[in-house]
Image (cartoon, rainbow, N blue to C red; front, side, top):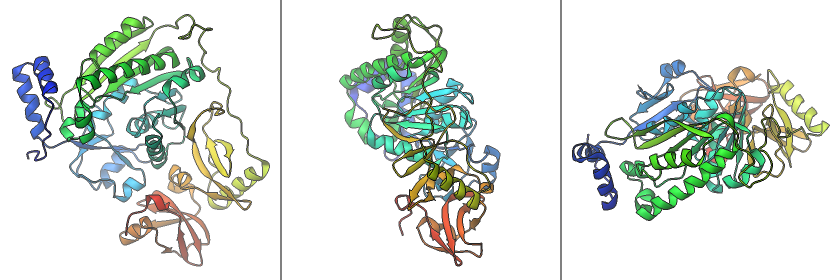
Length: 447
């Protein structure tokens, strides 16, 4: 099958690629633009195993070689399926799955995704952490940070703090704090040309490549200051430009003698099934004397103050009463109040004071007239066995729930988990055989 919507590529880009690849390989590179774009999903192992998903998958699946939970799919629109709303998978371009495995994240570590929106790599990191440790996901653009926050919620990530900050502003707070850092840097987007992404094509110029390289150099420098000795940075882009890729990596280790370049990889669409991508792996071998501003020695691991619970006794009692009545367990975490909102912060969470926080841990719910009312985020962070009452959907009922319509149930009155094939979609509240729909209006399918 041919790609009938081939992009018109910039002449200067083509000239550079011809010089870099040589005539023979350049011809193969150009031919790749006539092939269909690659689409993929990544199974969310925080909710379901790869093997379990393969048994129920509504899509034909082919494994992605570099991500054990990644699959190629042919379907163009995978976001309307109930499994998507239940957070069982994330729609992600296959090549974009390549960088996170190189970071070798482990449960219990402190991990930073410095340029995190829309959340594909953040949620991939969260899966590797298995709910243990602290994951900080930062995005400087507020509109993109909100999308990031929504994806973190949908996939049931419980140990993430989402920030909306300039990377430079985080350095004084987190100096030497993180074990692992991902820098999926803003770039010229040449690797996305094959998808005919209008924004990348319209904004491309040799000047923009140089501007991106300068910005990436600064962001890498900020990341370096926030990494502990012995930690690792993975730097990635979706571009082919050497100034943003190999030259950027070489310049970093030339100026930062406390780092070594372990390896780097460039993915070309004529060599693999996927779009263009690049990543480089850096290990920090030692602490530098002083810091970037010439001040005192860098902050050591564990030096940040922890966030204590600020929940009044009344909030704590209301939350515990709700859990006792409607759940089989009380979810773990530090209760934290922000206005009427009640959060469950992950264990070992640093103080949030003064930080531009969009979400921290799980937004458990809100206090309404002295009673605790659960949020959608809590429902999708739980498993089916955590609910005392459940309503299992099938066929047309699933569509009705996702459209916000009421359902019926013979279960006893109270809050219930609404399930699709055993996986939570959200909350319902049963009263007299009627299930009031609490699926968020902003997420509902259009009628």
